[in-house]
Amino acid sequence: MTNHIANNSQHKAAKVAGIMFLFSLIVPTLNWAFILSKLVVAENAIATANNIMAHVFQFRIGSTVELIMSAGLVVLGLALYIVLKPVDEKFALLALLLKLVEATIAAAIVLVSFITLQIASGVVEISIFSPEQLQTPVGLILNIHTAVFSVPMVFLGLDMMIFSYLFYKSKYIPRILAFFGVISFALIFIHALMFILTPRYATMPVNQIIFWTPSGIFEIVIGIWLLSKGLKIQNT
Image (tube, rainbow, N blue to C red; front, side, top):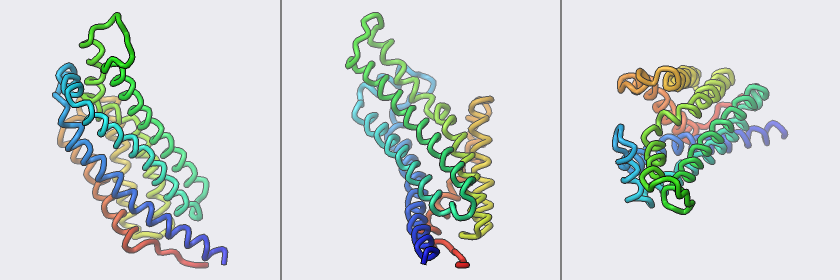
């Protein structure tokens, strides 16, 4: 009876994880492609700031989506923890804690963007700076958006490598898929470190394709798999 209840909780959590895998890939991609990137003027923080101030509501929508995504990371982490706790509770807990750190840093980045927007909009008065000087930081933050998010991506790579390893160990999903997940997020981890240590090479389009494409494919495949096939749990 206890095993049945535990298995039922795992299956429900797997469905939630499947939804969140797809949500955490598709929504941020669309948010950046159709909302935030439209405000960016490459290598010109002042022009980006002017775009933001001319389309403040659009920027607020983009920031709100990113904040929601931070909460979504917590949901995904908790769902994966419930699924994989029976495999190795300590490792699953470690991955969950790393996921919480990732979500916290991502939310902090949104908070900084919101604070700079408040200052640039004149909600907070700082008389010693000109309007242009106040507006430039919000443009700069958006211009270096990818580089800034490399910090939480370090934790993303680590936590998903652990979760993928536990999937591999459990045989809940095809082992080839779980192994692909380990490799995919090892690449994310390496690329995030590249952004911190050697940003010139990290921003090369070929490197972004090589390091990011596998994880995108993995998230789509595992999301669909968990929603359609679920977990293969062997009762003992």
